[in-house]
Image (cartoon, rainbow, N blue to C red; front, side, top):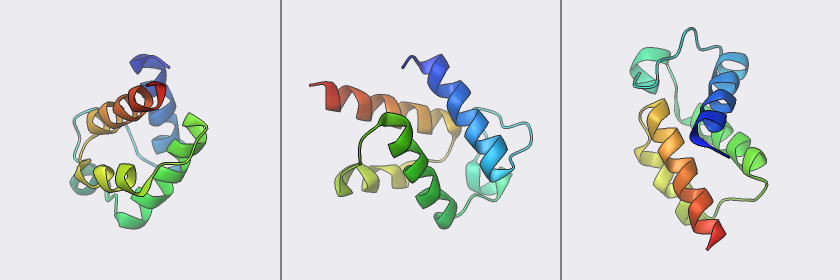
Length: 85
């Protein structure tokens, strides 16, 4: 998936499932949208479904540094490229 395709999918998930209103790519998920650790776990599950494979514990731990939607997109692209190798 291209970054634009990923962006569209992630924005749809955030709006439809997490009720974000007008999310910006550099918004702080926690401060601007009330995103918490339960939401993060749920989002990781949705990312796994989107990618079609389960994330390793190490990959999930890397997600702890995510703060913005751009961070989510960077994270997914990194995961995708590591699974292609």
